[in-house]
Image 1 (tube, rainbow, N blue to C red):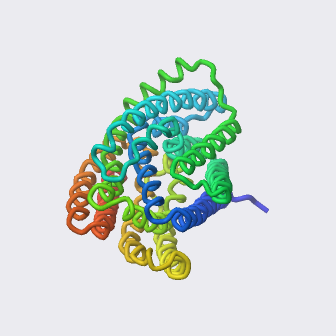
Image 2: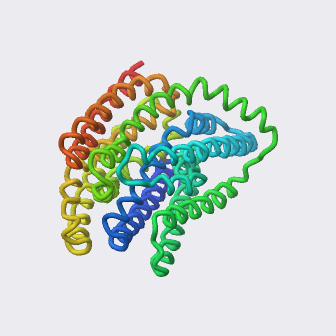
Image 3: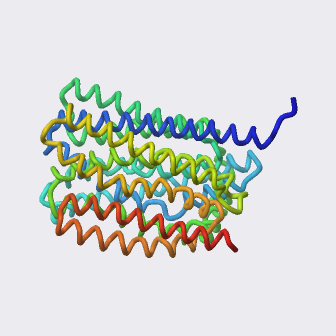
Amino acid sequence: MKLNISNITKLKSMRQTLAISGSNFFVMGIGFFINVLLARAMGLTGFGLYSFAFAVFNFVAIFMEFGFYSTAAKVLADEKDEYQERKLLGSIFIVYVFINVIFAVLMYVIGYFIDDFFVDKIGSTIRYMAFSGYAYTASFFMEWVLKGCNKIYLLSQYNIFGKFLHCVILLWLWHQKILFPENILMSYAIAIGISIFICYAKMKPVFSDCRNMILWLYNSNKIYGWPQYLGRIVDVGSANIDRVLVSYFVDAKSLGLYSIAVSFASVVNVLGRSIGIVQFKKFAEKNIISNSIVMAVRYVTLLSVALVLVTSYFTIHFFLGNDYQDVFIYILILVLGTSSQSMYSLYISWLSSHGCSKDLRDATFCISFVNIFSAFVFTYFFGVIGSCMAFSIGYIFSLYMYFVTYLKKCER
């Protein structure tokens, strides 16, 4: 029987998609369990303060990349020599460590001033946990590097192991009755640190000739990563400013409710984003995105919306109780945004794999204006409901902008 190379490739892509999607669903499931556990055990006030501190670390982490991780993905995707790839892996890890030293110093400084701007006081927590910044940049770093190498199964293992270990530590903290914000953040840092060490070691990075490799990454970053970074920090930063604004205009308790709603709604983009990750290296060789892939993302997105709405309703109604009833209303609004997020993941992946950094930057500048304007106005006037509306408006507009940018590039 004659082997069909095209069918073998498609089968591998399907297996990879199932692997990364399965790991992401597992992570989301554990994430739900963790959020529900913390919400029940800590109460609205404690959970809100933890959510606030976590949101601050995540928000600042958006800026701690400087384009190097997306550059590494592009360079790794183009690299055919295995030994050269391992040298690149070693060099980019050194860059990652250096960037997170800067992150730690920055967070320590922020810890001294943040209480001057917010009613809920978390300055001491931020200073105490400043060193743990690497845990919040890790997901971005590992995803770009591993999809650049097309090591999708290892990315799945990284996602599963880190989240599972975090859950185990939290269960121990819950059993010991010491579920305080600092301990929860510490457990997250420990779990992610162990996961990075184990998974990165499997790739056998080589730390020789680092000076030349880092110089190569630096020069490549000026072409690919830096222009895209400038656009992305504006785009992603503006898209994630919602939690900071909820804390500022409302309070930490409301942020806790909003965070639970976002964690539920985020499941919608898992499969679409997973397909984009798996296809990244292949997109670099394709002039267009096939219609079958686009339709697949549409169908799985609709299925995910139905799954999220049913699951969230029963969880809130039968487990969390009356204090959390508003969460379902938030989810109904948020899924409009996460559905759009699922769809545009394909276009971002294709544009990134083709080195369209300036085009992505220009699109994100437009997106950021919509995000920032809508987030400030809607959150100020309508509170958490307004923040949910701004969330979905921003991602719907993002889908439009990335789709238009993709059409312009693939028609050339």
